[in-house]
Image (tube, rainbow, N blue to C red; front, side, top):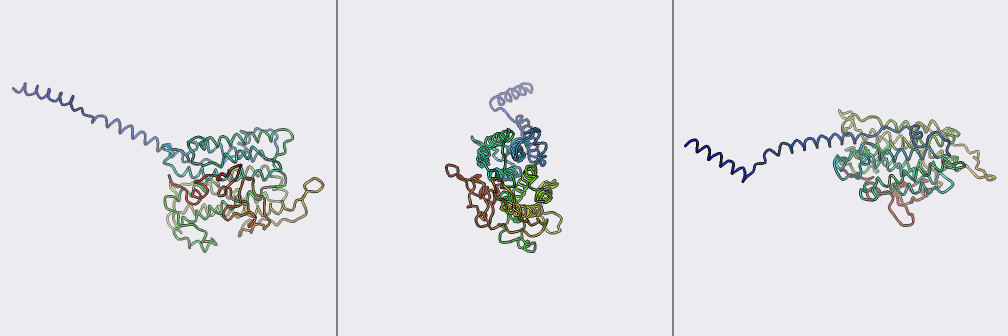
Length: 419
Protein backbone atom coordinates (compact mmCIF):
# COMPACT_ATOMS: atom_id res chain seq x y z
CA UNK A 1 0.00 0.00 0.00
CA UNK A 2 2.72 2.45 0.88
CA UNK A 3 4.54 1.65 -2.37
CA UNK A 4 1.40 2.21 -4.44
CA UNK A 5 0.74 5.48 -2.61
CA UNK A 6 4.23 6.77 -3.46
CA UNK A 7 3.80 5.79 -7.12
CA UNK A 8 0.48 7.61 -7.30
CA UNK A 9 2.00 10.70 -5.74
CA UNK A 10 4.90 10.72 -8.22
CA UNK A 11 2.49 10.27 -11.12
CA UNK A 12 0.32 13.12 -9.81
CA UNK A 13 3.35 15.39 -9.48
CA UNK A 14 4.39 14.68 -13.06
CA UNK A 15 0.90 15.48 -14.33
CA UNK A 16 0.85 18.76 -12.38
CA UNK A 17 4.26 19.78 -13.76
CA UNK A 18 3.07 19.13 -17.30
CA UNK A 19 -0.22 20.95 -16.83
CA UNK A 20 1.15 23.78 -14.68
CA UNK A 21 4.84 24.33 -15.56
CA UNK A 22 6.96 26.22 -13.04
CA UNK A 23 9.16 29.14 -14.16
CA UNK A 24 10.95 29.93 -10.93
CA UNK A 25 14.27 28.94 -12.48
CA UNK A 26 14.13 31.64 -15.21
CA UNK A 27 14.29 34.58 -12.79
CA UNK A 28 17.85 33.91 -11.72
CA UNK A 29 19.52 34.28 -15.16
CA UNK A 30 17.25 37.26 -15.93
CA UNK A 31 18.33 39.02 -12.75
CA UNK A 32 21.97 38.32 -13.60
CA UNK A 33 21.53 39.79 -17.09
CA UNK A 34 19.82 42.90 -15.71
CA UNK A 35 22.58 43.38 -13.13
CA UNK A 36 25.30 43.05 -15.81
CA UNK A 37 23.44 45.48 -18.09
CA UNK A 38 23.14 48.09 -15.33
CA UNK A 39 26.82 47.78 -14.45
CA UNK A 40 27.82 48.27 -18.09
CA UNK A 41 25.47 51.23 -18.55
CA UNK A 42 26.63 52.93 -15.35
CA UNK A 43 30.27 52.39 -16.29
CA UNK A 44 29.73 53.84 -19.76
CA UNK A 45 27.83 56.79 -18.28
CA UNK A 46 30.73 57.62 -15.96
CA UNK A 47 33.26 57.28 -18.77
CA UNK A 48 31.22 59.35 -21.22
CA UNK A 49 30.67 62.10 -18.64
CA UNK A 50 34.39 62.90 -18.35
CA UNK A 51 35.11 66.20 -20.09
CA UNK A 52 38.01 66.24 -22.57
CA UNK A 53 41.29 67.96 -21.77
CA UNK A 54 41.85 71.41 -23.36
CA UNK A 55 43.06 71.17 -26.94
CA UNK A 56 46.69 71.66 -27.88
CA UNK A 57 46.36 73.85 -30.97
CA UNK A 58 49.83 73.04 -32.27
CA UNK A 59 48.97 69.35 -32.38
CA UNK A 60 45.65 70.08 -34.08
CA UNK A 61 47.46 72.11 -36.75
CA UNK A 62 49.77 69.19 -37.51
CA UNK A 63 46.80 66.79 -37.71
CA UNK A 64 44.54 68.93 -39.89
CA UNK A 65 46.97 71.01 -41.93
CA UNK A 66 50.52 69.74 -41.65
CA UNK A 67 53.46 72.13 -41.67
CA UNK A 68 52.87 73.92 -44.96
CA UNK A 69 52.43 77.66 -45.44
CA UNK A 70 48.89 79.08 -45.37
CA UNK A 71 47.27 82.49 -45.29
CA UNK A 72 46.07 84.27 -42.17
CA UNK A 73 43.10 82.48 -40.64
CA UNK A 74 44.30 78.91 -41.14
CA UNK A 75 44.97 78.26 -37.45
CA UNK A 76 41.64 79.82 -36.48
CA UNK A 77 39.91 77.49 -38.92
CA UNK A 78 41.85 74.52 -37.53
CA UNK A 79 40.72 75.50 -34.03
CA UNK A 80 37.07 75.44 -35.11
CA UNK A 81 37.57 72.10 -36.85
CA UNK A 82 39.19 70.61 -33.74
CA UNK A 83 36.36 71.84 -31.50
CA UNK A 84 33.69 70.38 -33.80
CA UNK A 85 35.59 67.10 -34.15
CA UNK A 86 35.84 66.82 -30.37
CA UNK A 87 32.05 66.93 -30.12
CA UNK A 88 31.84 64.04 -32.55
CA UNK A 89 34.81 61.89 -31.53
CA UNK A 90 35.02 62.16 -27.74
CA UNK A 91 34.03 59.05 -25.71
CA UNK A 92 30.38 58.32 -26.46
CA UNK A 93 30.30 60.76 -29.37
CA UNK A 94 27.66 63.48 -29.41
CA UNK A 95 25.24 62.72 -26.54
CA UNK A 96 22.87 65.68 -26.45
CA UNK A 97 20.37 64.08 -28.83
CA UNK A 98 20.65 60.49 -27.56
CA UNK A 99 17.39 58.57 -27.27
CA UNK A 100 18.69 55.44 -25.52
CA UNK A 101 20.61 54.66 -22.31
CA UNK A 102 23.03 55.67 -21.04
CA UNK A 103 23.07 58.90 -23.05
CA UNK A 104 19.40 59.67 -22.41
CA UNK A 105 20.06 59.51 -18.64
CA UNK A 106 22.99 61.94 -18.71
CA UNK A 107 22.66 65.70 -18.35
CA UNK A 108 26.12 67.06 -17.47
CA UNK A 109 27.83 66.13 -20.73
CA UNK A 110 24.90 67.28 -22.93
CA UNK A 111 25.03 70.65 -21.14
CA UNK A 112 28.81 70.79 -21.74
CA UNK A 113 28.25 70.06 -25.43
CA UNK A 114 25.76 72.92 -25.66
CA UNK A 115 28.33 75.34 -24.22
CA UNK A 116 30.98 74.19 -26.70
CA UNK A 117 28.53 74.51 -29.57
CA UNK A 118 27.59 78.06 -28.60
CA UNK A 119 31.18 79.32 -28.70
CA UNK A 120 31.82 77.57 -32.03
CA UNK A 121 28.73 79.31 -33.44
CA UNK A 122 29.88 82.71 -32.24
CA UNK A 123 33.31 82.52 -33.88
CA UNK A 124 31.92 81.02 -37.10
CA UNK A 125 29.42 83.89 -37.34
CA UNK A 126 32.14 86.46 -36.64
CA UNK A 127 34.69 85.19 -39.18
CA UNK A 128 33.06 86.79 -42.26
CA UNK A 129 33.48 90.14 -40.48
CA UNK A 130 37.22 89.42 -40.18
CA UNK A 131 37.65 89.15 -43.95
CA UNK A 132 37.42 91.61 -46.82
CA UNK A 133 36.11 88.95 -49.20
CA UNK A 134 33.05 86.65 -49.07
CA UNK A 135 33.55 83.40 -47.16
CA UNK A 136 30.92 80.99 -48.56
CA UNK A 137 32.51 77.97 -46.87
CA UNK A 138 32.41 79.63 -43.45
CA UNK A 139 28.82 80.75 -44.02
CA UNK A 140 27.89 77.18 -44.92
CA UNK A 141 29.56 75.93 -41.75
CA UNK A 142 27.73 78.55 -39.67
CA UNK A 143 24.40 77.47 -41.11
CA UNK A 144 25.15 73.86 -40.22
CA UNK A 145 26.12 74.76 -36.65
CA UNK A 146 22.94 76.77 -36.09
CA UNK A 147 20.66 73.75 -36.21
CA UNK A 148 18.79 72.31 -33.26
CA UNK A 149 21.28 70.66 -30.93
CA UNK A 150 18.79 67.90 -30.01
CA UNK A 151 17.89 66.72 -33.52
CA UNK A 152 18.29 62.95 -33.72
CA UNK A 153 16.34 62.25 -36.93
CA UNK A 154 17.78 63.10 -40.35
CA UNK A 155 19.41 65.55 -40.67
CA UNK A 156 20.70 64.83 -37.20
CA UNK A 157 23.00 67.11 -35.26
CA UNK A 158 25.91 64.74 -35.97
CA UNK A 159 25.20 65.04 -39.70
CA UNK A 160 25.28 68.83 -39.52
CA UNK A 161 28.45 68.83 -37.44
CA UNK A 162 30.08 66.68 -40.12
CA UNK A 163 28.91 69.18 -42.73
CA UNK A 164 30.42 72.03 -40.74
CA UNK A 165 33.72 70.17 -40.43
CA UNK A 166 33.82 69.56 -44.19
CA UNK A 167 33.10 73.24 -44.88
CA UNK A 168 35.92 74.30 -42.56
CA UNK A 169 38.21 71.83 -44.31
CA UNK A 170 37.27 73.27 -47.70
CA UNK A 171 38.07 76.81 -46.53
CA UNK A 172 41.37 75.59 -45.07
CA UNK A 173 42.34 74.16 -48.46
CA UNK A 174 41.63 77.53 -50.06
CA UNK A 175 43.92 79.23 -47.55
CA UNK A 176 46.75 76.88 -48.51
CA UNK A 177 46.54 77.81 -52.19
CA UNK A 178 49.18 80.21 -53.56
CA UNK A 179 48.02 83.83 -53.41
CA UNK A 180 45.18 83.18 -50.94
CA UNK A 181 44.19 86.34 -49.05
CA UNK A 182 42.80 84.85 -45.87
CA UNK A 183 41.54 87.04 -43.06
CA UNK A 184 42.15 90.78 -43.16
CA UNK A 185 45.20 92.28 -41.47
CA UNK A 186 45.02 94.82 -38.67
CA UNK A 187 42.70 92.86 -36.38
CA UNK A 188 39.54 93.58 -38.36
CA UNK A 189 36.51 91.89 -36.83
CA UNK A 190 38.23 90.91 -33.58
CA UNK A 191 36.52 93.59 -31.52
CA UNK A 192 32.92 92.56 -32.37
CA UNK A 193 33.76 88.92 -31.69
CA UNK A 194 35.31 89.74 -28.32
CA UNK A 195 32.26 91.82 -27.39
CA UNK A 196 29.97 88.87 -28.17
CA UNK A 197 32.26 86.62 -26.11
CA UNK A 198 32.10 89.06 -23.19
CA UNK A 199 28.31 89.17 -23.40
CA UNK A 200 27.98 85.39 -23.32
CA UNK A 201 30.34 85.15 -20.33
CA UNK A 202 28.42 87.90 -18.59
CA UNK A 203 25.12 86.07 -19.06
CA UNK A 204 26.63 82.81 -17.82
CA UNK A 205 28.10 84.42 -14.71
CA UNK A 206 24.67 85.70 -13.64
CA UNK A 207 23.06 82.32 -14.27
CA UNK A 208 25.77 80.70 -12.16
CA UNK A 209 25.21 83.28 -9.40
CA UNK A 210 21.54 82.26 -9.31
CA UNK A 211 22.60 79.03 -7.58
CA UNK A 212 23.00 81.03 -4.38
CA UNK A 213 19.99 80.78 -2.12
CA UNK A 214 20.22 84.47 -1.13
CA UNK A 215 21.11 86.58 -4.21
CA UNK A 216 21.11 89.77 -2.09
CA UNK A 217 24.35 88.52 -0.55
CA UNK A 218 26.03 89.28 -3.89
CA UNK A 219 25.30 93.00 -3.61
CA UNK A 220 28.49 93.56 -1.56
CA UNK A 221 30.49 92.00 -4.42
CA UNK A 222 29.43 94.71 -6.89
CA UNK A 223 27.01 92.34 -8.62
CA UNK A 224 23.77 93.71 -10.09
CA UNK A 225 21.32 91.66 -8.06
CA UNK A 226 18.41 92.68 -10.28
CA UNK A 227 20.02 90.89 -13.21
CA UNK A 228 20.37 87.63 -11.32
CA UNK A 229 17.58 85.30 -12.54
CA UNK A 230 15.36 83.35 -10.20
CA UNK A 231 17.01 80.75 -8.02
CA UNK A 232 18.21 77.81 -10.06
CA UNK A 233 16.46 74.55 -9.08
CA UNK A 234 18.79 72.14 -7.33
CA UNK A 235 18.51 69.59 -10.14
CA UNK A 236 19.67 72.15 -12.76
CA UNK A 237 22.67 73.63 -10.93
CA UNK A 238 25.00 71.05 -12.46
CA UNK A 239 23.58 71.72 -15.95
CA UNK A 240 24.40 75.44 -15.77
CA UNK A 241 27.84 74.69 -14.33
CA UNK A 242 28.77 72.26 -17.11
CA UNK A 243 27.38 74.53 -19.81
CA UNK A 244 29.66 77.28 -18.48
CA UNK A 245 32.55 74.82 -18.33
CA UNK A 246 31.90 73.85 -21.95
CA UNK A 247 31.87 77.45 -23.13
CA UNK A 248 35.10 78.17 -21.27
CA UNK A 249 36.71 75.01 -22.72
CA UNK A 250 35.83 75.92 -26.31
CA UNK A 251 36.72 79.60 -25.88
CA UNK A 252 40.09 78.65 -24.42
CA UNK A 253 40.94 76.60 -27.51
CA UNK A 254 39.63 79.23 -29.94
CA UNK A 255 41.52 82.07 -28.25
CA UNK A 256 44.75 80.10 -28.60
CA UNK A 257 44.05 79.59 -32.30
CA UNK A 258 43.20 83.25 -32.94
CA UNK A 259 46.36 84.31 -31.09
CA UNK A 260 48.47 82.41 -33.64
CA UNK A 261 46.80 84.14 -36.61
CA UNK A 262 46.75 87.60 -35.03
CA UNK A 263 50.14 87.47 -33.31
CA UNK A 264 51.49 90.44 -35.29
CA UNK A 265 48.46 92.59 -34.44
CA UNK A 266 48.63 91.78 -30.75
CA UNK A 267 52.40 92.38 -30.64
CA UNK A 268 52.14 95.69 -32.51
CA UNK A 269 49.72 97.08 -29.91
CA UNK A 270 51.32 95.36 -26.90
CA UNK A 271 48.27 93.21 -26.24
CA UNK A 272 49.91 89.79 -26.24
CA UNK A 273 50.28 89.66 -22.44
CA UNK A 274 46.66 90.73 -21.97
CA UNK A 275 45.50 88.06 -24.42
CA UNK A 276 47.54 85.46 -22.53
CA UNK A 277 46.01 86.68 -19.25
CA UNK A 278 42.55 86.05 -20.70
CA UNK A 279 43.62 82.54 -21.68
CA UNK A 280 45.06 81.93 -18.21
CA UNK A 281 41.76 82.98 -16.60
CA UNK A 282 39.90 80.43 -18.69
CA UNK A 283 42.49 77.75 -17.99
CA UNK A 284 41.80 78.19 -14.27
CA UNK A 285 38.14 77.36 -14.91
CA UNK A 286 39.15 73.96 -16.35
CA UNK A 287 40.79 72.58 -13.22
CA UNK A 288 39.72 69.09 -12.21
CA UNK A 289 36.42 68.83 -10.35
CA UNK A 290 37.27 66.45 -7.51
CA UNK A 291 33.73 66.18 -6.20
CA UNK A 292 31.47 63.62 -7.90
CA UNK A 293 28.68 66.22 -7.88
CA UNK A 294 28.49 70.01 -8.26
CA UNK A 295 28.32 71.35 -4.72
CA UNK A 296 26.23 74.35 -3.71
CA UNK A 297 27.67 75.35 -0.34
CA UNK A 298 27.94 78.85 1.06
CA UNK A 299 30.32 81.02 3.02
CA UNK A 300 33.08 79.19 4.88
CA UNK A 301 31.01 76.07 5.37
CA UNK A 302 32.13 72.51 4.89
CA UNK A 303 31.15 72.44 1.22
CA UNK A 304 32.26 74.65 -1.63
CA UNK A 305 30.00 76.48 -4.07
CA UNK A 306 31.39 75.39 -7.42
CA UNK A 307 29.01 77.62 -9.37
CA UNK A 308 30.27 80.80 -7.68
CA UNK A 309 33.91 79.78 -8.22
CA UNK A 310 33.18 79.28 -11.92
CA UNK A 311 31.29 82.61 -12.04
CA UNK A 312 34.32 84.35 -10.54
CA UNK A 313 36.59 83.04 -13.32
CA UNK A 314 34.08 83.95 -16.02
CA UNK A 315 33.66 87.48 -14.66
CA UNK A 316 37.42 87.95 -14.79
CA UNK A 317 37.50 86.63 -18.37
CA UNK A 318 34.55 88.87 -19.30
CA UNK A 319 36.33 92.01 -18.07
CA UNK A 320 39.53 91.12 -19.92
CA UNK A 321 37.64 90.35 -23.13
CA UNK A 322 35.81 93.70 -22.99
CA UNK A 323 39.00 95.65 -22.41
CA UNK A 324 40.72 93.88 -25.30
CA UNK A 325 37.67 94.59 -27.48
CA UNK A 326 37.79 98.28 -26.51
CA UNK A 327 41.46 98.61 -27.41
CA UNK A 328 41.19 96.66 -30.67
CA UNK A 329 38.07 98.64 -31.57
CA UNK A 330 39.96 101.92 -31.21
CA UNK A 331 42.85 100.55 -33.25
CA UNK A 332 40.53 99.40 -36.03
CA UNK A 333 38.72 102.74 -36.13
CA UNK A 334 42.07 104.54 -36.36
CA UNK A 335 42.88 102.80 -39.65
CA UNK A 336 42.18 104.43 -42.99
CA UNK A 337 42.79 103.62 -46.63
CA UNK A 338 45.48 105.93 -48.06
CA UNK A 339 46.71 105.50 -51.61
CA UNK A 340 45.06 102.10 -51.91
CA UNK A 341 46.89 100.76 -48.86
CA UNK A 342 45.65 100.38 -45.33
CA UNK A 343 47.75 102.33 -42.84
CA UNK A 344 47.45 103.00 -39.14
CA UNK A 345 46.92 106.60 -38.12
CA UNK A 346 48.82 107.87 -35.06
CA UNK A 347 46.05 107.45 -32.51
CA UNK A 348 47.20 106.33 -29.10
CA UNK A 349 45.44 103.31 -27.71
CA UNK A 350 44.96 103.30 -23.97
CA UNK A 351 46.76 100.44 -22.21
CA UNK A 352 44.60 97.57 -21.14
CA UNK A 353 44.49 97.30 -17.34
CA UNK A 354 44.78 93.87 -15.86
CA UNK A 355 42.03 94.30 -13.31
CA UNK A 356 39.25 96.60 -12.27
CA UNK A 357 35.73 97.41 -13.38
CA UNK A 358 34.67 96.77 -16.91
CA UNK A 359 35.14 99.57 -19.43
CA UNK A 360 32.16 100.90 -21.32
CA UNK A 361 32.03 99.90 -24.94
CA UNK A 362 32.56 102.56 -27.63
CA UNK A 363 29.49 104.43 -28.78
CA UNK A 364 30.42 104.06 -32.42
CA UNK A 365 28.53 101.08 -33.86
CA UNK A 366 30.64 98.12 -34.81
CA UNK A 367 29.95 95.84 -37.72
CA UNK A 368 27.99 92.72 -36.90
CA UNK A 369 28.76 89.33 -38.38
CA UNK A 370 26.82 88.49 -41.49
CA UNK A 371 23.69 86.55 -40.72
CA UNK A 372 23.20 88.00 -37.24
CA UNK A 373 20.34 90.20 -36.10
CA UNK A 374 20.40 93.29 -33.88
CA UNK A 375 17.32 92.14 -32.01
CA UNK A 376 19.29 90.17 -29.36
CA UNK A 377 18.28 91.28 -25.89
CA UNK A 378 20.76 93.76 -24.43
CA UNK A 379 23.12 93.37 -27.41
CA UNK A 380 22.03 96.12 -29.76
CA UNK A 381 25.00 97.04 -31.93
CA UNK A 382 23.69 100.55 -32.49
CA UNK A 383 22.99 101.22 -28.85
CA UNK A 384 25.98 99.66 -27.14
CA UNK A 385 28.61 99.16 -29.80
CA UNK A 386 28.56 95.41 -29.27
CA UNK A 387 28.09 92.60 -31.69
CA UNK A 388 24.84 90.75 -30.93
CA UNK A 389 24.98 87.35 -29.33
CA UNK A 390 24.38 84.92 -32.19
CA UNK A 391 23.00 82.29 -29.83
CA UNK A 392 20.09 84.46 -28.72
CA UNK A 393 19.29 86.24 -32.01
CA UNK A 394 17.83 85.28 -35.37
CA UNK A 395 19.35 85.02 -38.84
CA UNK A 396 17.87 85.40 -42.27
CA UNK A 397 19.34 83.41 -45.13
CA UNK A 398 16.91 83.51 -48.04
CA UNK A 399 14.07 82.54 -45.72
CA UNK A 400 13.52 83.34 -42.05
CA UNK A 401 14.90 80.81 -39.64
CA UNK A 402 15.73 80.69 -35.99
CA UNK A 403 19.35 80.99 -34.98
CA UNK A 404 20.66 78.04 -33.07
CA UNK A 405 17.57 76.15 -32.12
CA UNK A 406 14.15 76.49 -30.61
CA UNK A 407 15.32 75.03 -27.31
CA UNK A 408 18.52 77.11 -27.27
CA UNK A 409 17.66 80.76 -27.86
CA UNK A 410 15.64 81.10 -24.69
CA UNK A 411 15.14 77.89 -22.78
CA UNK A 412 18.67 76.47 -23.09
CA UNK A 413 20.21 79.72 -21.85
CA UNK A 414 17.64 80.55 -19.25
CA UNK A 415 17.09 77.08 -17.79
CA UNK A 416 18.89 74.09 -19.33
CA UNK A 417 16.71 71.03 -19.51
CA UNK A 418 17.61 68.16 -17.27
CA UNK A 419 17.43 64.77 -18.77
